[in-house]
Length: 466
Figure 1 (cartoon, rainbow, N blue to C red):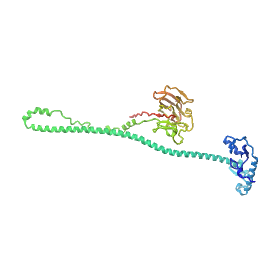
Figure 2 (figure 1 turned 180 degrees about the vertical axis):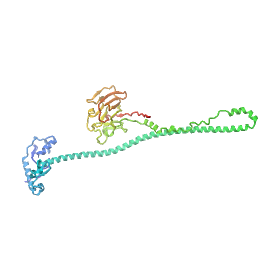
Figure 3 (figure 1 turned 180 degrees about the horizontal axis):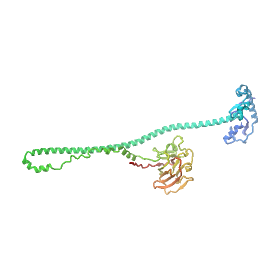
Figure 4 (figure 1 turned 90 degrees about the horizontal axis):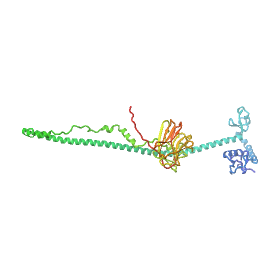
């Protein structure tokens, strides 16, 4: 009676059994296959029925081994005459060994030759199994790489969509902010043109009044001249009326020659026009020393359009899984790295009851859960459950007379100090001392719906004169 070859195949390697063993559940496997499977799984269970094996070294299935060896021998005898490819081309002998140095099958004559002197060998069957193991490992590595590439491909497609969305939204915000600039410029332009028009009307009105006065005076003078010419012809009439004539024609004179300041003061309108317009413009806009980086924000954080405030949302929004982003908790950093020198910013905490503020190393982990402490590259002040703590190792509890609604963060990188102040009272809360070596980033965390807001700073313009 012939047995189907499928019944002689190991369920793990799908090849004819080699040194088969019998488990307590009656399933058989190659001894090498079941050992590798148990090493990988970490437990002794049957790969077919999952039943736990009773022995760590199961007994050989002698009947099955003999049957498999007989089938293998029959196959070898039946195909041997046709498989000249399995013979050594130099010596005509069958390949029975595998050279581990040259990575090729050889015959027993090749083993004794100078070509393979001092080389290590394995029987063909063992070498084939080892090669299968290597290929299996290679297959797994390639499959892992393929899976990673699939993830990268999926992430890249998400990034393409997000980049398009970012470009549209950023373009909209650029237009909005430039429209605000345009409005201020248009307003300033209208104001200055109105001032010019007002001066024009004032100067022209004054000149028109002067022209009217001059015209009336000219008419009066012509009449007087005509009368005087008539009187001059009659001496008696001249003498009788001389006193009245002298009194009439020697009265106050109109100042018709004083034309100073009649023209428009052009220099007043054009003097440093661009600078004075810019000087007025900057009073209409705010400067914040720290701007949040949306590419680092956790999906549960909502940032304002001007990137100066943040709050927590229990409904995460879509964003790509880029390496810069915080993936574990609701964190975000500022866009500008801080190095040598002094840096400061004020954060309005308001009624937010769950926050951390401070700085973090630019190289600190963002993909795993770590405590915001110095050993992990974080120097922070924490407010949670109504208590203030400096996040040292272990955290330092702080006693404050009142909760600050504005916290000033002040970093002196070169001196190695990071100070936190109650900005309203200029009261020092805590100081970290550390020798900084990495570039730092402003750090923010909150799990509260009330916002944290970075406050704008006053800007002063100083003219340097040499």
